[in-house]
Amino acid sequence: MTKGTQGTSATSRNGRRALGALAAILAALLSTSLAQPAAQTTPGLDIHYVPTPMDVVDAMLNVAAVSGSDVVYDLGSGDGRIVIEAARRFGATGVGVELDPMLVKRAREGAKKAGVADRVSFVQADLFKTDLSKATVVTLYLSPSINLRLRSKLQRELRPGSRVVSHRFPIGDWAPDRELMVGKNRVLFWAIR
Image 1 (cartoon, rainbow, N blue to C red):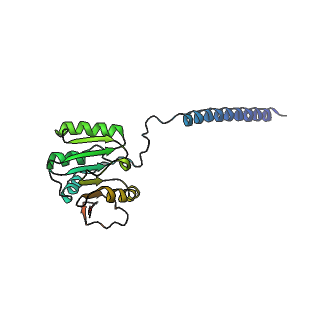
Image 2 (spheres, rainbow, N blue to C red):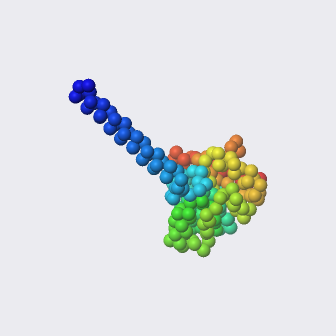
Image 3 (cartoon, rainbow, N blue to C red):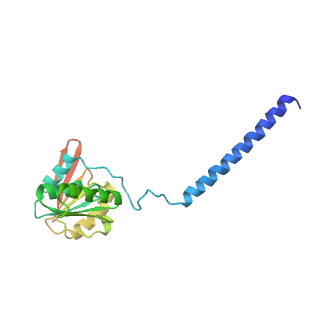
């Protein structure tokens, strides 16, 4: 064997050893990360928080003709802006239902800052397990599939005359009573019969 061949063979062995060691390290890291739950995830979150623009909030509350006698439930309430505005501008009471505890905390702080904490509440809860029978207005900014899953619950639990307003997404093939555009944002309105 020539000197050049021995060098190549030794380099090749060292490379295989390094790759083997790297593979062992990666396998150990992977098994450790899979064994430990993610600390920053909230179980059950189906969609990511995207705030409703304030001009859309205004349109949603206006199309629903929210007044001081209404109880507004916002399902997936995020930072609470819809419920807070319903109370601040129209004197309504309201409940925000949200799974993310940090958003619930932010909404409660926002209600205090707006001076409406006595008229609104925010709960960390599953919207499918929340009793909607006290609501006169329900607002949504969820997804087409979640809206569709909610349809029978809305029809079963809401009294005739209650209103449902969705930012952007339909509720299956349920024809809206009104539909409007706010810039590029669609707002859909239904009255429960």
